[in-house]
Length: 156
Image (cartoon, rainbow, N blue to C red; front, side, top):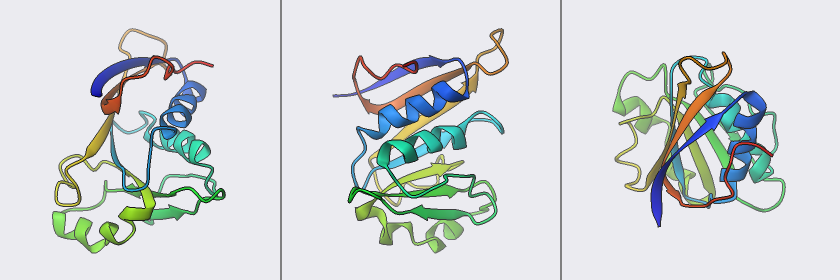
């Protein structure tokens, strides 16, 4: 059953832990859109996903290269990490040819909201916001389209 959930994350380490734990749910062909303001923790979340998928790293922001492929080290799906921030149109997203690697990869797209509908109708979303009034590193993470699980807490 897919559901929405909101999780409080205290710091970058917990954001990575959340990504690592959610990676257990990911299968080849999954597309996840990461949304949030600059500095929210989208790439930090992606680092956790990379660790959970056991891919060759390091997972860093693909802002200047637009897309980076991290091959699996364990025979699982590769991680395709995309930053759509500088893309100006749906045609530019199409030029990335993401559908060519979709079947064998988990595709994470930062700043991709509303840009991937032609790629698949099964898009999961991770919406990261600052926890106003909380500590400076605290974040509120809304998960959309994930399987309901009680063990996907941000802390270890």
